[in-house]
Every structure is written in structure tokens, then in C-alpha cells.
Length: 506
Image (cartoon, rainbow, N blue to C red; front, side):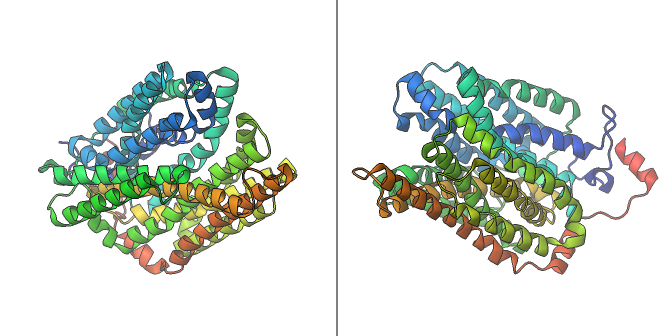
């Protein structure tokens, strides 16, 4: 069993790979980005292809939407246990197996000849995606301990922020000019390259706690509870929050998650160590990021609908309009990781969340006649501040967590993030539909009146995204910079001399 109790030089990433002569932590980051970018982009890239898939297979939109829902459910089933299994069987082994499953699932999706086949293969994709994200996050967190976590947070934020934005662009182009099958085939070269690179550079890592008996009851209740909850949320936007299936699956999910919580708090070796939520910085960071990701996911979908349904742009055109928002993020990400130590988390969180919220208010003034360049400028401005909050929150979330708890911590975060993003989308879509109707939209109204009602409905949905950002802003007010520095310093190793650095690098 390798690296069960690493020396400080090992843990603090001063090792240098003989193969590449790069610090090991950056090799881990490269492999991680391969996996996470594919996983996150696949949550949005299929959305723009739904009308095409409906025509191709002569299926209803509701049937085709299961290609999205099935993927999300698979993620929910496999995310909770991913950290535990990687700590038990090895992070390198589980991460690369997950990536291989994802690539195989992508190839099968591209070859699908019917909607049931495509849904089944998307579920296979989700198995790999559900394991890749938490395992990769844990690997990265172990290699960037303490205050160094700000660098890792900036790395994680790259795919987290850019993939959902670039997904519609890539998906729109491939669907419109190549073939819908290539929205899946494109994962093959990226995934194969990531697997080969990971095989060459990654080191195996296991944790002692995970070698004990597997908490089967916790595994079953946690996975089933997350899946039922996510299914209810994903159906709420279309069926309404009061529908029988939404209420039934929602209550079942809550009951299963409650049972899971009781089990995990009592067993000696839990699948997810929920006791981590008793730690202020871990709990508060999750509490800040959940509404933020909900608002982020809801905004992207509502803006896509605004551009395509109200403005009449094609999927590719809508994607290209949204693409420049990545420019703002690309500018702010490296800056955020550099200034964390001098500015401190509280000011970065307050400033990042406040500006992210304020950047949404101008969207309350756009309508069917707003020049496209104004929308593009607003999107670039919107992409600037959010990275500062993400880097600070994730540094506080994982930086103080000891190495052996990184797997469970990343699984908790990934599960909550997925549920929050799905909840945000369902909530914002429900608000859009209900408010459009309340403004006089729907059947039997004139075109001009319907368009005006739709614009007002979109404005209400954008305002709801703004309101969600007020929750993390309120939590950020109670972050104490001094206590944060103390918590991070507990995972910062003692100084290492140059001779020790060479020795640690092997």
C-alpha cells in the first residue's frame, strides 16, 4: 500500500517527476482538468442537440430529455461513494477506470441507434463522470495543502466555470455543421490522451480508514437518496413542484437522505464522513457555493432560452454570444489565486459575490431589441468577479481538511454541487414559466403581447438568479480572516530545505 503516511516533502508536492521534470502537483492538475472538463461539458453540450435528436429518432422532446436526466441520475448514484472507493482501492486506479468508463460510454452514445440506447449509454457515461470529479478533486487537494489551496482552487475553477459556457458553443457547432454524434465522439481523443498521460505520471494513493468493512447500508441509502432527490428536482421544471412524481420522489429522496445521515453519523467507518459538516469553514463554504452554482446553472439555461426562443438565434449563434463570458473568467482566475494571501478570503468572498450579483441586474433591462454587442459586454463583465469568490470559497473548503479526509470531503461537495445546480435550473425555469403566464403570456394572446409577457418573465428569472447570490453574500459576512489563516496553517508543513526538496523528489 503506497503513501499511507507520506512524509512532509511528499505531501507538500516538492516531488519532481523523473519523466517530465515538472512538480508532481501540476501533473495531477493536468490530468484532473482532462477529466473534469469532459464531465462538466457533457452536462450542457447535449442540451442544444435535443431538437435534433428528437427529429433524428422521431421521438418526443420529453423522451429525448431523458438523455440529460439519465446522465444526472447516474452522477447522483456514483458521486457519494467515489471518494471512499478511491481511498480504498487507490486514487490513480479509480480515477483512470472512471475516465475509461466515461470514454467508452461516449463512444457508445455516438453509435446509438435509438433513444433507449442513447439513454442507457448516457447512464454509463454518468458512472464515469460521477467518479471522476470527486476523486480528481481529492487528488488535487492532497497535493495543494493549506494556503496553497488557492492555486488548486483556481485550477478547479477553470473547467467548472468554462465548461458549461463552452458546452453550448461546441455542441451547437457540431450539431449544426457536423453531426450530433460528434458531441460524444469529441470526448474520445481527449479522454484517451488523459488516460495515457495519467498512466504515465500519476502515483497511487490509499487511505488506512477505507481498508475497513464497507458501509453497504450507507452506500445504498446515500446513492438512492441522491438519485431520487435529483430526479424530483430535474422533473419539477417541466411537471411543476406539486406533481405526483415530483412530490413522491422528492419525499422518498429526503427520507432516504435522512436515514443516510443517521447511519453515517453512527457507523465507525462511513462512506461519507458527514461530521466534516460540523467544521465551520467546510460547512460555510458549501453553504456559499450551493446557491451560487444554482444561480449560475439557472442563468446559463435561461439566457440560452432567451437567445434562442425570444431572439431567434440558432444554437451555434447563441453559444457564440455566450462564449465571451469566458474572457472575463480567464482574466480573473490567475489574479484571484495570486491575491488570496494578501487580500484574505472575507474580502474576496464579499467582493466576488456582491459583484457577481450586481452583474446580473443589467439583464433586467435587455429585451428583444437590445443590440447583441451589449449582451456580449454584459456577459464579459459577468464572468469577471465570480472566479474570486470560487477561489476563496474552495480554498476555505478544502485547505484545512487533512489528507485522509479529502476523498469524503470532495464527495460531499460534488454531491451537494450537483443537487444545487439541478435545483437552481428547475427553480429558475419554474419561475420563468409561472411569471410569463402571470404577465399574460400563453395561448390566445397576440404576438406582441406574448413577446412582452415573455420579456417580463425572463426579467423575473434573471432577478431570481440575482436573489440567490444574496445567500452566499450573507454567509461571507461572517468569515473571519484570522481564523481562516489559522485553519489553513494547520495543513501547511514546516519549511523544507533545498536538499530535502531534492530528496523528496526522488
